Image (cartoon, rainbow over all chains, first blue to last red; front, side, top):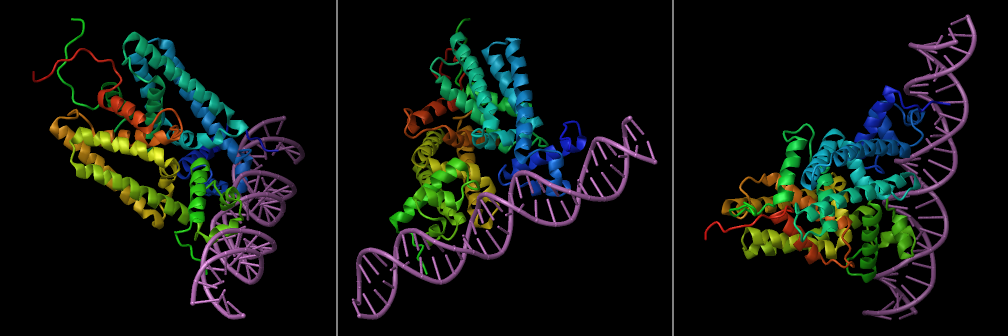
Length: 205
Length: 205
DNA sequence: AAATCTCCCTAGCAAGTGCTTGGTAGGGTA
DNA sequence: TACCCTACCAAGCACTTGCTAGGGAGATTT
């Protein structure tokens, strides 16, 4: 019996390779032979380290989501107001894209299909958690007057969620634009819009 | 020799079925047997109507893109200003999602992989066309003072493109929210932002 | 020195993949 | 009557898929 323990560095190396290929070619299009080839071994040898192809995806997604929601919880616990919380959550999301682009890409493109498998039921739970988080931020913000009163909260949630995560398709961690810079630009559009402003005066002088 | 002509209504029926399955399960995960099963025939019988699985996807994407860019060209030819043009293009895109959700979903999720095949080189061309169109709208808008001067045009283009098309993942043509209503909500956020407004005065009184 | 562990190979299986072949039933047309 | 067309079936081919069984060389532990 082989170990399939999680301590090996070779194992981590293989998992990272798998993540890259899953992200590039898609989960179903990536064969275990592809992964083995990239590592310079034969496909059967992969099964010394992992139970199955599915378990590789599982491990990648679990690790990523645990880290992501950890950072979300820290932000929510800090109790900044709605606007600052929104900024922090969006920024943390872009930083996740920066740190783990492959995992985000896998989550973004494969979750829908993987969710149907019992093994990946936690993806559905995470989705609900995510929705709850954004609903709270937006509802609070509207109540406190930080966000527009006529916002369709559900629709706004979807727009924010989608636009943030879909950025993984073009964002380049090695590029000139940092994740924080992208987050800042995005928040500028999201909060203030792209239309040119007319002159402003404060409501309460 | 069979015809594979494009006039048959049965053919159109099969193509529509394939579109639905490609959109739901993904192109690679959908087998020709799946499509045949859905139509109540055997997999081999599909090849009386189509040359290959690939040609089904080709036909679906070509038809969709021709229609889409046709509507874009009409809008551009109308010569509305930047802001109205932006609104019209975004609205036309949401209407495309409404009319051809399966095709949009295929384009959205499979184009990246299909583009690598010589047969689908036109996808790359269409992408460039799309980018040019948005660059023109945004650059014009900034020049004319309709949009904020500090906009990163390239980044803004990506945000708009992604957020519009990714809506196909949750938009339901049979739902309560019409495509035009979604477009209006989205344009509200995009143009004016979600932050609550302070009192305004006109720049030129 | 013996035993164990790590990491990989050789070899292959069962299930499924897109696609091809030869054929047929029913209908229209000359 | 003779011919052709549409739309399908039955059978199967060449190949790919995830995964398994068993073994072996080298390092580490006992």
